[in-house]
Image (cartoon, rainbow, N blue to C red):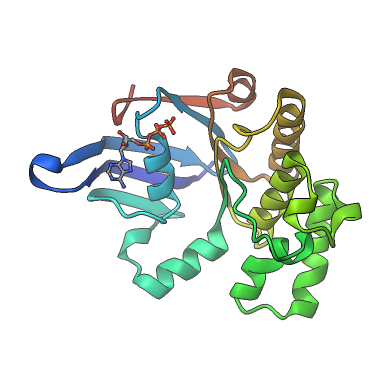
Length: 223
Ligand SMILES: Nc1ncnc2c1ncn2[C@@H]1O[C@H](COP(=O)(O)OP(=O)(O)OP(=O)(O)O)[C@@H](O)[C@H]1O
């Protein structure tokens, strides 16, 4: 299997001088296309920071990230944004849905932002909402949905552009156990059906055990 991600000697620090915080301290890692990875470690170890850099919503201080062989941080601003929108889906602990839009509108937002016509975006988003078990909630706004349903909408939105990589940062950290289990099963189901590469930050041991590989971070390094 080919590598989807090749990460070499990644460093990330914030601030400067006496206030400098080194968060990532030389991370090297390969991720095979279609792999599932649990990223675990104590609070403050740098897991979210690594996810943000892999997802290109933050930039490394130094080091190289190759996605499908391409050095992504060599891309300029607009090209990088377009790469991110097309290739990577994100699910966060808090769903970040737009409250004034319906489930369907939220799910199709990345397509609309990418320039797809609404008439084309709608059936794609509706199909995904059906896949996550929400065909009966298309016109509900986030405030009218349960926590698990909101997270399902966020998952549909993350998948609407058929990304190769799904990054999920504590996707069920905010949900009760039963709802978490349902969302975990959904993520695994999506991985199996789509061959999606999945990296999940989690403190949930049951979820970590479902992933093919566990990567443990300790103080900015892979242990
Ligand atoms: N923008 C920032 N400026 C300064 N320090 C930061 C910034 N972002 C993160 N940090 C610091 O980097 C360290 C790692 O944070 P990060 O959120 O990556 O950890 P984590 O492993 O995801 O933790 P948790 O499990 O609690 O979410 C923390 O000490 C944090 O305070």
